[in-house]
Image (tube, rainbow, N blue to C red; front, side):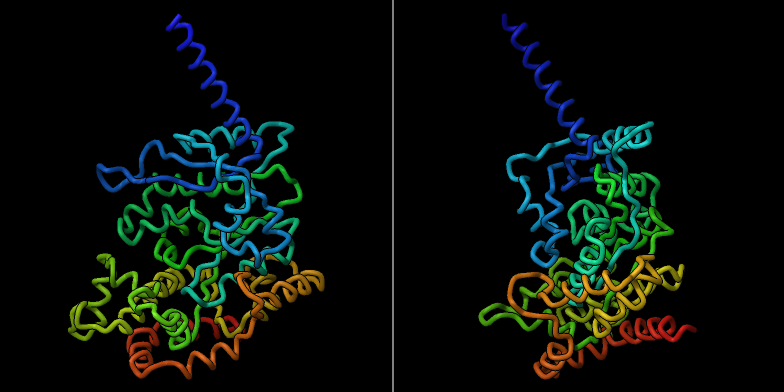
Length: 389
């Protein structure tokens, strides 16, 4: 009896697993998390990488991008809490998904990745993502700072370029993106990513996996972007600022940058303002390096938003036709605060002037020494395209 009961239990578990896989293959469940992709032996990804899937209510984001501006908010608004499906081998699921999508008469497909938004952080990138979603809501799916891509892109700074561009890592990243693009809604045609700012340091992996996909890098005037990070609520310490992450957990590359630009000063001798500027410069540098190599990206200044999107970037770089309908959709979404947490409206000029007035001399000096060189290069590259030269 014991053996029979155990056998029935195993058969039931196997059927349940098959049922879950089938829901994924029908594109009813979406990839939401990838777990611990690296091997403990050597600098490489595992042969079997686990992942979670659940049903995402994409209609929430499509109908109100600013209310579900971040991927985590879409996950929270979907029935993901108690209905996550854990899969031990994402590669096998990707193989099965490709077979299903390529089968004759298939009702599922994977949308192509049409564009990627990288950014310096606190520079209006969420407005760009919201505009991509609002421009053609039925056709576009936009992942705004989602978990799966950063699970690999975020390792590049720590693991190094050999890890990032290895065939095994590139293949896993392609599988992740393929699964994120799957849909049974034939109206959906195009997928876009807005990557977390730290993901810019994984630019080499993105380019190795998708060399033909256009990308942009959104940046901002140095003092203004520093003040977006350092102007914290009363009672909050400066060390809580996001731009001091590299100071708290410095990578080898960050230490090299300090040695190169720090004027002989050690990590501890540099001020918090210095480290904030250096951290932001370390985010800008990979986009500069990649643009110098490939000329496949576009640099977009915060001050140009949202006009540069509808007049140039969307139609000329991402290949999105912009008619009066798309223009009105984008103008409408820009009347809302991009992260939907208040009644604030987009006011680039007023916000920029306020930040410049609030800046201390320490912020101004740090931005001049450490961040201005990156900004000047990005501006020059931006003007090269805007002038048509």
